[in-house]
Length: 293
Ligand SMILES: [Zn+2]
Image (cartoon, rainbow, N blue to C red; front, side):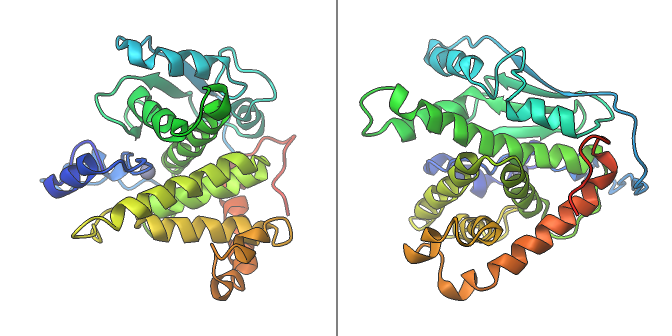
């Protein structure tokens, strides 16, 4: 789903389901006018860049009181507090990576349950509507908000890292092949595993699992969409997680969630992704955090 080009049928699909909408996002190509077809081709550079920015979180006070609880919970969290606590994942990213300019992460009302990367403003928009949806889904069957507050943060982190993948591709002009949405799913998984946040990376596949269940109810699956289907995203990211440490994540296979036939390939699949992302991001890592070899 993109801001400048939204298919009617996908709009209906989105409204008719409770898709967790890791499906938002703006592809940088939408900056180009589809009428003129003029797309600025950036030169790919692998030179180190001056560190002239950080990931910065801002909050817009919600006008709808229904979002007050999520607004406060986010600001109380280790990960999304302002100012950023040094152990938070975003603080770690700012320590690890040089950015050519600030990447703003704006928690705000959007009018829809979604999340976007806006390449013109270099801004990630995290919609309260989406986070409220996480709260509602994860809160089903839970007595107290404390029981699932962490789960909401993990889901928010998972979506944030997907959007951050779009920001990395855009800001570093990373060369990619394949659907950008798939590429940034893989970025989110590899990066969260590097940062050792298993809960957030697993929250990501839980979202894809819900998407897959919702897609089973559809008459026509959106094969044409810019994202893979929920089930495909589920297995791709599950494979990356399992492949990163087959002993630690052995229950992915023993539970039957990840078929053995695919699991056999996952250690190599993970190693290739990790190697590729290390190569792509090496010029942008600060000297104190050299790329793993
Ligand atoms: Zn996306």
